[in-house]
Image (cartoon, rainbow, N blue to C red; front, side, top):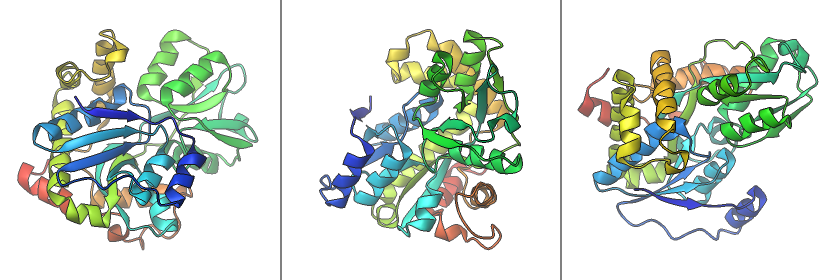
Length: 331
């Protein structure tokens, strides 16, 4: 099973560590430190299984749980990790850091949810507080785009990592409007039927989670990167073809043991819905995904410029993806 380092440091403390250049020792050949900027849940089964499969092929992976996409991106910038999970388009463009996405794990499938006693529609959120995953996250991008499309402006945006955390806050009444993933949307419907309203969103095809790294690591660690990308693609294809495979992976690799055996049913339902929605890229994204992302993230205000003039190579390195698809075949 993979090694998980749980880091309960505050963002400011972590940023200070980065600024002081007190980086962790560089990984040895064959080692890969992956920074996960979220709390792993059932939506992470695909990613966790692909990591296990990469380990079986000789890549020594340490998964570092940072609970915040900002921290995951900072870990890559500061050299505390080799590979990040997220969609750091804003960082890539505005910070000028030589970081590149190199594979797409999943596309956006989020559900804005409001307490029905307080709000009924998008217009009701004008001037109100909302909660999202993190600054620069897909959840923030969706909510900003919906605000723009509905002619409203939020009063405040709070950053609350973890879709399950935001679901529980809705149930407790400490949050009145937020955005959650499919699993937690279903949980809200089951636990408090009629109490919450899911607000409508347009169809989205932008990146929710992707793999990213520095240009140097993609070159120096190409052999390990190739294996990880191949396993991400293979896992996505197998789950899409038969969503029940996600449960098999979970039990084989003993993933998320704290959830108990009861979670298997929810995992099967989640991946059935995800597969039907086509949210697991069968070819890992690449140039086509980048163009979809340009359209979405410029509309939401996460990146600047004319989507048609933005260059794929400024945000993506598709080398590993091209090699993987050539080896596995294109779907």
